Length: 404
Ligand SMILES: *Cc1c(COP(=O)(O)O)cnc(C)c1O
Image (cartoon, rainbow, N blue to C red):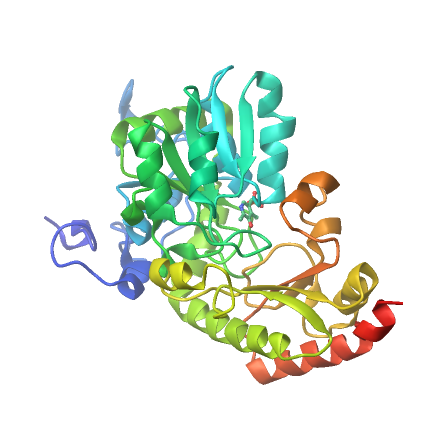
């Protein structure tokens, strides 16, 4: 075996996460030694004879070497056998839904990403797929929602934006008994903090746009799993529908993923400090962060995750006006949708990322219109704390006034 063919992951001594993030799926270019994976801007590949592609590549909708490098990297990080990269997180969710047929049923958690809800209810429901939304922190509620035609259990943990945590191992075991596939949207945790496949899930879903890309400069998504039949099925839809990731975007995600562990350590440390400061502030009504001992699933999160992530949500005294004022008063936290980049962002989910969920459904899930969501970046924590402090003081309404 040539030097460049030596697998850097896979068999042999198991490499640690930080090492895999940099090396898995990567090799120096066999032609010229380029250390970084080249961006293969080629839609098509020369064949040696009809239907005999030289290295398995024919046409870039089907497969592309830059995309392969990313897919192999992500598979290694999630502890899976395969990965498939898509043009967005929703394109990845769409590929999963493409496998469903009229009359099939999906159990999803009620506090799911707004775009996922929209894809289910405004696209696939019209094709005859049935969806039930349940509080997945309640294992019994999930069990009761299963029907004979249930194909998928669709989980997210921690959830967006309420940071609820569900017991992936327990729920995946329940689903398995009924032949239901468990899918976990692992966007918030990333494989650095949580590996759902090791907990019994069948497929991990990512919006790579967020922490894995990490620099707010690319939209991308992925599915990762172990079962080869399932991979073939999903790769069929990826190719047949055409929602695959382009080579430049695959390169950007690959560049980002190498520093994922470094960034996540800082995101988690900063978020923990900010969550704690918020709980101590008299103008703050409620704080949602799984790293707080007061969080209803704190112990489960501590067991299931390596750390608690970089997302913090909270409610101010003064409801919607206070939330809107806060979101426009921060100086370092930019008012914008999305999350997981190095820079801190703030948003009001009910009127922004989650506006596609009907008001009554939001209310049922406990998502108040005055909830503020922070994506805590990797800046110096003291600067972030000072910014949050000044914005609260200039926006929240003291409880006594709010009650009038
Ligand atoms: C952003 C997001 C998605 C959708 O991903 P896109 O890349 O925006 O299509 C799915 N799930 C979660 C949790 C997200 O935050």
